[in-house]
Length: 258
Image (cartoon, rainbow, N blue to C red; front, side, top):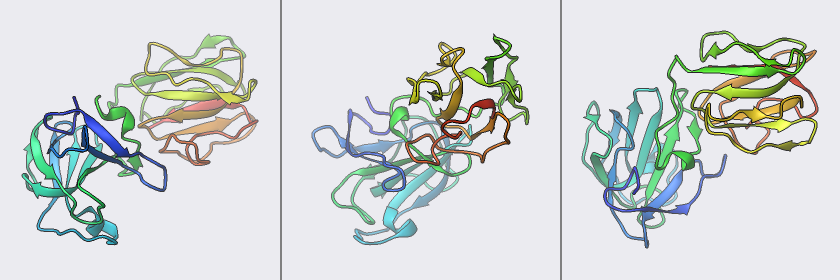
């Protein structure tokens, strides 16, 4: 069952594409309509109604009738093109509570739900992994650690958003463990991305092989280059040149997650 439809499995009609369509378009299976439910507990921070079908509209108007909810971990979900809105700004809603009914208001081509997830910086991320699971966590007790390829052991855990980093400058890292985050790394020696890992049950990397790229879903993160400096913060995990931390061919010796 879907986390955002009332009584049916969702069918994706238009997927997430970075900088093109940063959301999912969803209908009830077999192209049917359905009521919309809150993905997770949270507070309604925007609820717009009385909008009409308006193809070609841009900006906020393109959403038509919509609801935006802020969740306890700082993430947001947004539900657009609604025919009806059942909640108002300031309402606290529970997971599974009906908040509206799908429609075609705003810039829509047919009845569907436009569903977005935004991180705590209000930056859109790919909703696909979270359609039927909890949102990424900003729990400040989350920890991560890296493997030092020179010393050949795992370095101590670092708490997310503590202002500290995991690594030893000058010593390339060969693996990363992290609580709850879905991530993968680019193996500098092999020249390709290794499989995604989901949480502490596995680590990302090949111990002994240097890492030159990192992707972490639902986090803001950065990498430090061996014999270099810190690269810019990244808040995405995709196939663009801004969707990972690192530079191909340059070993990473530290990472920081906030």
